Length: 77
Length: 181
Image (tube, rainbow over all chains, first blue to last red; front, side):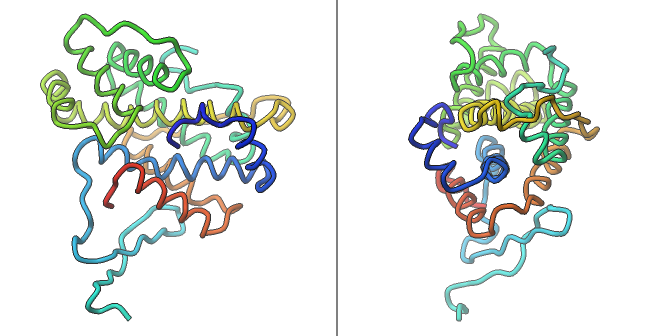
């Protein structure tokens, strides 16, 4: 994520010992997907959904996300 | 590879075999970026991002002020995005307009992630891991912003990894990018 050129033989061996090649493809695509935050960070539009709460991130059957329930410290179980 | 051709890199052929819909979405986002951003602007952005990541040699800073502003923004986007500030955005906004700035940043994401995937897959996989011939790629035909949403969605539909692993990736990305969403 920070520098793919830094994937050296040691890291490659460790990753390939833990994951199959198809799983590594998916892992890299997870990294890609969550790097989409770079767009809002670069534009200066990144904001917390709620400053005083944790907000659930929900994915629908088509893979699209929406924000769900919120938890505030004073209401947390 | 011409500017408007979806990235046809051998490194991405395993992605095409394992996650064809995500590969189509990446190609569609690439196509849309080339349709919505002026060619000289996108060419500078691509060259700077690929140089930052080690895929291309360092180039000279463009003499043209508009392209120099794009180059500076692209450099910082690839190097460490939390340090992109108004000092970098304002000259691009002045040159391209507010909509142009937003479109360019979306295109930077496509260029940046395509380059990173090419490098990572080139280092992680051997030729023997890849299919003998390149899987067919059918780029999605969506505007850039929608193409990016589709790309994200296709990645989220992959099911080989458990949810905990995906969550670790999400938290790691948010932490590194100082993202609050």
